[in-house]
Length: 312
Ligand SMILES: Nc1ncnc2c1ncn2[C@@H]1O[C@H](COP(=O)(O)OP(=O)(O)OP(=O)(O)O)[C@@H](O)[C@H]1O
Ligand SMILES: [Mg+2]
Image 1 (cartoon, protein in one colour):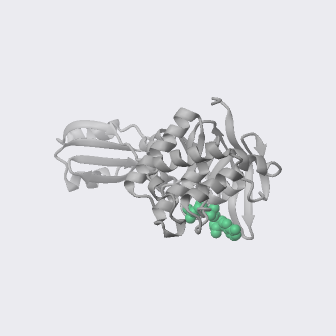
Image 2: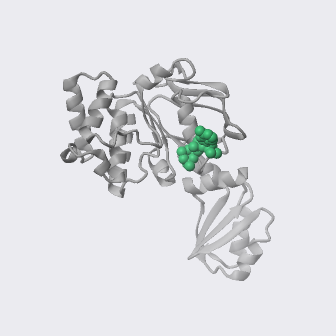
Image 3: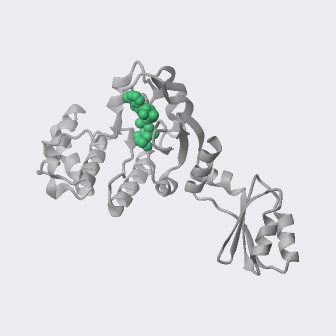
């Protein structure tokens, strides 16, 4: 692995389909060996971005480099060194699992012996080896999805694009795939670029996440950075003696956006980053027994939703 190098960089990338601006001027970089989560609601432009990065689509303007290759002129090099799982799984339904992988292994020019080893290794890992002779059209959706992920890894790529890799997988298979992806990045320095609608998954495994909506990049950073950006805006007061009248009074504070009582936890959301000292003093003067005051911790999901709300 070459640490500190850049695997993906885009510069003001645009892609238009008629009236639809699917990708609207995005600029970002992905460091080599990073597990990078590309997040956004349906229709945000995630799959389009991946297709642009693989050189499967021509940008309307702007540019992108993947592993140092230009997506417009060196797409063949990109596809040689990258693995990609797109929305369609790309499997041949009438071939068996083994035949599918063997075929892709040939496309990647992997020698026969090495191909057979790699097929066994990957299928065993995914618990599919026993069923390797069956045709893929008789398999369940999740089994096909596992095979499609395996296919992208056949040639030990330096970079993999995975468009919703855990979609349709059972919880055990999804957890196991997540472990494999972390292992790929940590142990083997492979850059993993993935999209997912499962934000707790992104929070667990991604080093960096980007949020895209309506073709525009809203933010890039570590899941912690994103959560903290939003967490500065709330506090949790654990204590006793809260009542509705008190909550109503708190709601009249100029900086306060919303107040909620959850059990013995009073959660106060502010309109912006605020010193909560006044509010705590006010509570103490009202005979509230305060056990603890702490900064609210937004989940990645909350941070994501709040980012999208801000853009709307
Ligand atoms: N080939 C195409 N022709 C016309 N419009 C397209 C094409 N591909 C994508 N779009 C439009 O571009 C926008 C972004 O689509 P894209 O598939 O990139 O979204 P996405 O973020 O992957 O969404 P999802 O989470 O649903 O997979 C959508 O409005 C979509 O309708
Ligand atoms: Mg998509």
